[in-house]
Length: 297
Ligand code: C5P
Image 1 (cartoon, rainbow, N blue to C red):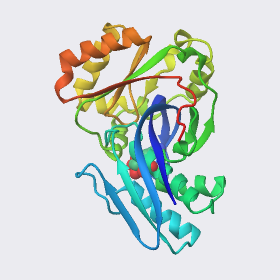
Image 2 (image 1 turned 120 degrees about the vertical axis):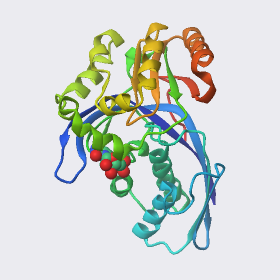
Image 3 (image 1 turned 90 degrees about the vertical axis):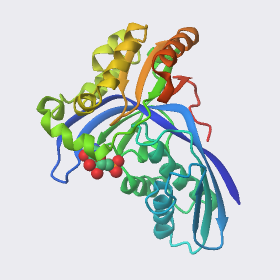
Image 4 (image 1 turned 45 degrees about the vertical axis):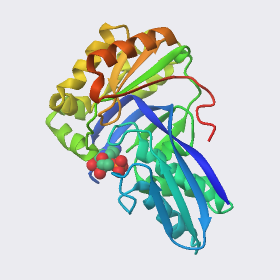
C-alpha cells in the first residue's frame, strides 16, 4: 500500500514570547495559519527498514531529517516490525520559519498511520508529534489555530473572516536562520522576551472582523534579534508596506517574511515590483489566505 500526501507550511500571524522556562524552552502564544504551499511525501509499506529519498541532494536523509525521525518514532511507538519507503519532494525552503520540516514530520506520522491501518489514535499522534518538535502537532490538523506552551498545545479555530479576499506573499531571502540561535539571542531583548499575555487570543478574536481591528497585534518577538542581525529583512518589510501590503511580518524564527495583501491583482503587482528590486536570490510565492479546505491531504 502507498499514499501520496501534501505537506503544507504555515505563517505565524503573531508569535508572542512570554518568558524563558526552566526546561530551556520559551513559553509562548501564537496564531498559526496554514499556507497552501506544500511538499509532497510518498509513503509505501515495505518488509523492513526506513528508506528515505529526497529530490534535494543537500538535505540529509538520515536521522538528521525530521521525516526519518518521525518514522523511527512511529515504528518504536507501535512496535510494528515492518518498514517504509518514503520519498520527499521538497518545495518549501528550509530554516525558513514556515514549518516545512515540522509539516513533513506530522505528515509522515499521518501517512504511516494510514498505510499501517491506524494503529495510533489522535491522542497518541499528538503526543508523538510533540516529541519531534514544538510546531509538529499543529500540522496534524489543517485549520488556523492558536498554540500555547512551547507551541505544542494547539486549539484549532475557524477561518478568519478578516482574511477573505487576502493573499499571503511569502519571501525567503536565500539564507536561513537557526531557530536555537534566534531564541538564544532573545535574551538580549528583555521587552521582547517577556511579552504581554493575551495578545494571541485578542488577535484571533479581532480577525473575525477586520485587519484594521487586528492590526496592533500582528507581532513577532523573534524579530528583535533576527532583524538586528539581518537588516535586509526590515528593508523587505518596509518595501512591502510602502507598496500597499496591509501587513508585513517575519514568520517563526525567520528568515521568511510574509505580507498580507488584498486582492489577486494587487498581490501580483507587489510581487512583480519586489522581484524587480530584490528578486535574484529570493524565493517568492503567493497564495490566497482562506482557501478552504486548506489542505485536502
Ligand atoms: O521544538 P523545536 O525542536 O522546534 O525547537 C528548536 C529549538 O528552538 C529548541 O531547541 C529551543 O532552543 C528553541 N525553542 C524555544 N522555545 C520554544 C520553541 C523552540 O526555546 N517554545
